[in-house]
Image (cartoon, rainbow, N blue to C red):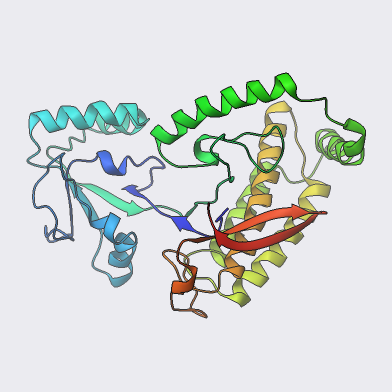
Length: 315
């Protein structure tokens, strides 16, 4: 559901972790002026909401030549500093803190340059109140079906309980019905493991990332999306017949890359179908937001091997 809708976060330049909401500071331009009207000094209660109001503002500053933009934590209280450090660790940002310690960077004295990160698709697996998907016996929770720690934890329990109940009453699957597909998947895995030469998962992954950024990135149109989908499908054909895995670890990465190729195709299909501009889904060929589509999501399912797209309200 909704793979065409994207979001972006900000954080320290050249780091993949961000902790955007945990930073207690003020975003400032090179002239020490706040880039937004919300805060003028560090405050853990409010934080700087500027990038929440306009997600691409840091990118706009760089493109206009007014950047860079810095996170300024100078003047932070001892209490707020301890709060920030505590939750940085719990958000998985300990590597960032270790780096700053090694380099002698003290956020109470030094500015930290921030940037906007890559686009993240918001697509989810649709579930009902029991965490059931459209496939009998398959349940989903967490990032795959929703956002936020609270809902993810709650639906983890719900999915587990309902899956356990389902298993007690479900009959065994008809393996023979899916035999052809099973054998096809086995052959794919065996071929990747047995090849002695060819591109590895890194090459395939980089090619995929380049296609997604160039043809389904911040600017989208029918011509760009059509070309990108064509290139992605050609890449998939080449990957299926040439990608190699030297060991079990690389095999796992190869399978992840195949999954990403599938997801990339969903992004292209849905982005082309949503003929409007909405949020970070920017369509210059459809520059207006269609109010008739408010509250509606794109649902994509596979029927007889082909994608079927339906635009409807998520109920």
